[in-house]
Length: 80
Image 1 (cartoon, rainbow, N blue to C red):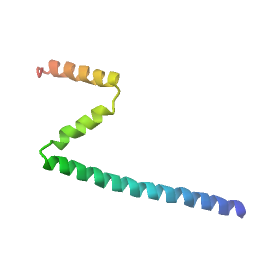
Image 2: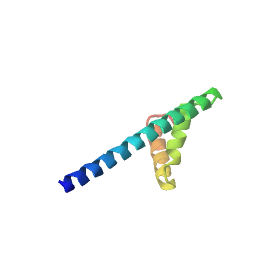
Image 3: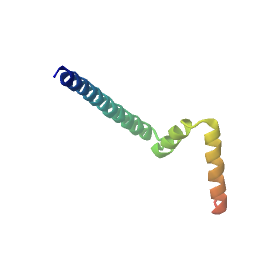
């Protein structure tokens, strides 16, 4: 019986931690939306800023590979 109580306590602890993290994630998501709204209000394009944020997460080699591939596809479609 003691093992079941310990397991239940451990499970409850995990669930409570997950719930706290989900709350923090929701708060961060709300903050991020506010920043995007603020930058849009100052004249920046949120779509482009999201692309920049995504690109900044890539390492240099990965970024160069994606840019080269994009250039190749654009050239193939007559867009270059």
